[in-house]
Length: 123
Image (cartoon, rainbow, N blue to C red; front, side):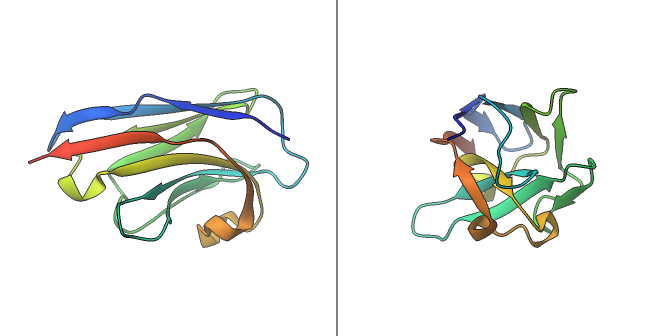
């Protein structure tokens, strides 16, 4: 099983920035798609951004143009640069790996999950 550890969450005012990091213990055998997902209280987990084995990135409409997903050369560390944060971005953010069909941004298609890191944006 792949261990995923997120860091970088915190509290910030609207308009601010945060950078999330995710370190994987090894590459997943289940698929090369990795991504960030989030879950706000009372809501379903939703896709934020994913990155494929070729480096192609996908974003939800709600974060397009504000968030940037990236990986280091080993593809074991993944980042999410979040700019122009809004109160509606407040959620528990999860790192995920071992996925397929990155373009679908579907939590159901990734098999490995971190514990999550809290992001709180105040107005």
